[in-house]
Image (cartoon, rainbow, N blue to C red; front, side, top):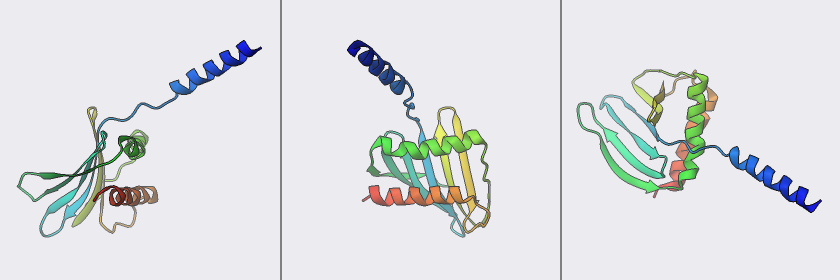
Length: 142
């Protein structure tokens, strides 16, 4: 009887480990910009936990600097959510004087959501995601 219990526990453990999701490799770019200066800025969060601050004026090279490091696994929920929206086909390609954007960059390509600052028809789940991401950055950056 004990042998059956041990065998059952071993099989259940093997099934559970097979269900573990593989980490998403890539980068999450979050930012906003436009306006009369044309400046775009934000953060680049790499799946290894490195966070870079970036900015770019029109016609000039992008400037980046180290902003901090966070546990790599803490970024996975954000990367997974963007991947789910990509697979679901969610599209936001808003324009305006000032825009906000989220972009998932992977070896297989990129997926971008963009909306005008103050735009009224942005899905609530996207706005909540953006707010949670901003709060995450505030907690993890000096």
